[in-house]
Length: 138
Image (cartoon, rainbow, N blue to C red):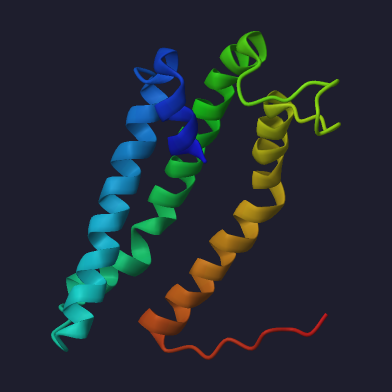
């Protein structure tokens, strides 16, 4: 989603938030795929395992900040241009406003980020500390 926005709106491509999320994504993916590769080779150095389950503590929030700031920077351009929006009347009799869609996407980070972040913390505890995590039934 964020890459689609960044690729579509030239005016935001030089924003610092874009640099932030691209660097964070790059470091995260290098760490993740190094982990997968060494794991497949049955030769997983502890440093790679440690990096996979610790770097997210800082990288995940930084990535979210970069993504949200990028979407926020795009909002004026999207609103002004009406890009990817569909106005009535049209032959499909459907309306879609990309500006409000992006706002909803930004708001969705509020409930989703904590769930995903705490899931990774539980995974970290299980993998690095050998703790068995019992999920509560709700």
